[in-house]
Amino acid sequence: MCGFVGIIGVERASAALSMGLQALQHRGQDACGMGTVEEGRFHVYKDLGLVVNVFSESTLSALRGTAGIGHTRYPTVGTGVREDAQPFYTRRPGVLMAHNGNVTNVDELEKRLLGRGIHVQSACDVEPILLVFAEALSERRPQGHTTDDVVEAVREVFEAVRGAYSCVALCEVDGKETLVAFRDPHGIRPGSYGRSARGGWMAASETVALDALGFSVVGDLPHGAVVLMRPGEEPVIRTIEPLAPRPCVFERIYFARPDSAMEEGRVNSTRWAMGKRLGEEWAKLGLQADVVIPVPDTSRTAAQAMAEVLGLPYREGFIKNRYSGRTFIMPDAAARQAAHRLKLNPIPEIFEGKRVILVDDSIVRGTTVRRLADLAKSTRPAAVHMAVYSPPVKHPCYYGIDMPSKRELVAAKLPESEWATAFGVDSVTFLSLDGLRETMASLPHASHAICMACFDGDYPVPVSTGEVAAIVADRGRELPGTGT
Image (cartoon, rainbow, N blue to C red; front, side):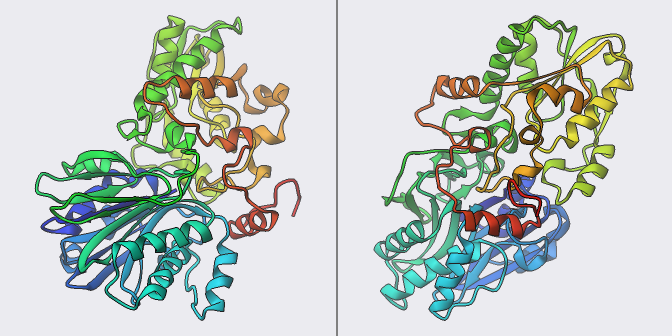
């Protein structure tokens, strides 16, 4: 999972990109990068670390131009090295590009490109997308590319590239510097765009980046289409290959900020609806509790909704260390476990002697919930019930969420009857699959299905056995269902 920002028509693109990337820092803490365009020349800088640490005033000053692309990286393909940070660019033709998502057929694309004498130099999957796009442009004409050329190049990407991806690129189109944005045919990964009062344009993974810079949100990037944006002009939108929309539900559950808006509305409202349904389902179990406590930060909204449904007090029972980072997107188990020890500290009087419901967004590997149970029990509660506002994660995600091996998924390894014992709590309640589907369908602006393959195994883009093996091997994981 990553975050991108593309911007055009601002006085100083690098400064604007820096602010936009800080709004998307939650989407990737491993590395970040930025590229700008000045009179046809690319200026690119990227490194490991957080945005505020990588980009100094002197660094930003060297990134000259009124258009640029920025990126925060959480690696699901490739490694945590500087060379795999985005954006990437190609000199012929001149294209700068970044993306969010996960390409499932990277090996196939690399072989295709090598057969044409084009070498992929990194382990980052945006590079094959960029090279397929650039090659398609070059085949139509060496320079002076038109809108129709870009449309056909994106069409070639849609035909050749499998997986989930939202992309932004900068290149010259119709003789003008142009910000190009497109999403895969199912629109699995998010993307939005908007305009400034002075005629500039911006595309980003989440609307909070546009909010930070005072851009008015126009809408979501259309799936299976391309949007071309130029300062002072209306955007050109060309539909190419839209398939049934299947945006990722895990974005709504965990990754996106609650103040972001996506297809069906504000993420905060979506989480409220999930918590409300979880409360209704929990009430039917006959369990008793005295207080509802969220696991900060993502679970607060759902916990408030659940408490309201159950008629129980909502209390903040954990203090979060603001400098510990998001443990789910840490690169390995050792780092995640160390971060958990720093991340949360309980307030004993909130727990002591009470039957508590701990509300969390999801349980993937089980690391967090075991640590939470230990922390809660150290305060001598009467009972600890775990309530999760998503279903059990039983299937790998191949589209950009870091859970590519079924052997890592605790709910897939253990029968339901053993979950409470394994996690060290009195009960575990997940939002049901039907509850999640019905909740998403009931939202005011819902007009589409969702991708919830990590919960139900229904993958909108089929992934072959060979592609699975390559994805799992890339992350140093075991193959699903094997011990190797």
